[in-house]
Length: 153
Ligand code: IDP
Ligand code: MG
Image (tube, rainbow, N blue to C red; front, side, top):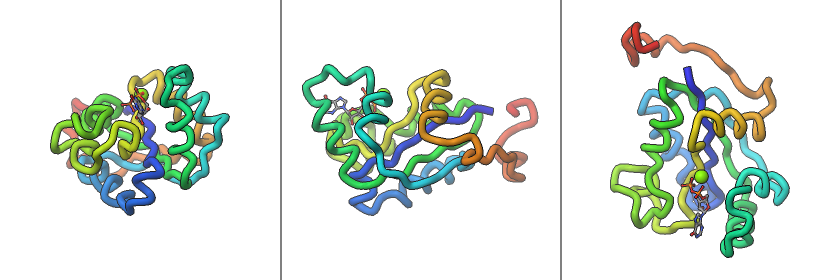
């Protein structure tokens, strides 16, 4: 079963929305396999956002991501990466569809509530970047029997 990586960004912590956002993933049927608070550094952000380092907004993005600690999470489910990205919505909250996390909780392109891995390959890389192996709890809860048909597992 697939795992994906999520960051609850500083704007989400500041606005007191961490619980609401995590609840969405729990209600959907994901299980949390990793969860912790951490202060991001410029070094880890340069790695994590390597595809954006040359963009004019990059310094603002780094500053924003370091403004408070973040909550990082790993969630697990069938097709977790694609399902979480669909729940996340478009990058700019003003363009994200209502019903998505960004569409429901934000107004900004930069201050857009969460990060979510965009491919299974990147999810694996990002989980390793932010979590030590013993911080991931890869269990199978009883709820799976009610969430999935046997041939989906
Ligand atoms: P994603 O988070 O939807 O995957 P990416 O293009 O990977 O979007 O960008 C990473 C993050 O950089 C975004 O979530 C957002 O916080 C920020 N960002 C992306 N594009 C812009 C922009 O045009 N202006 C300001 N911030 C941006
Ligand atoms: Mg991205």
